[in-house]
Length: 71
Image (cartoon, rainbow, N blue to C red):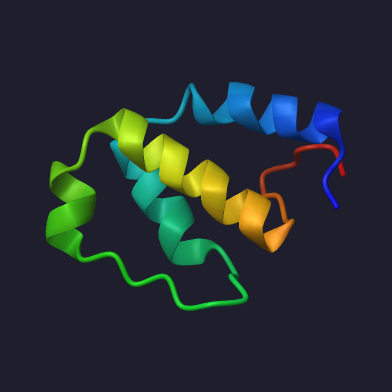
């Protein structure tokens, strides 16, 4: 389970990510379930929505992305 400080740091990191970084992370994230957003959705959805979805993905999987975020 992710600790509250890890979640807080993840939220701070996600808030700095642009669309290209989010798309890259969606493609690289090793999820325990299929994540199959279309390219059209990823390119048209508001960045804030993508940030929210990526946070939910991390929380559901109880995993942080591979970016040097403290474990």
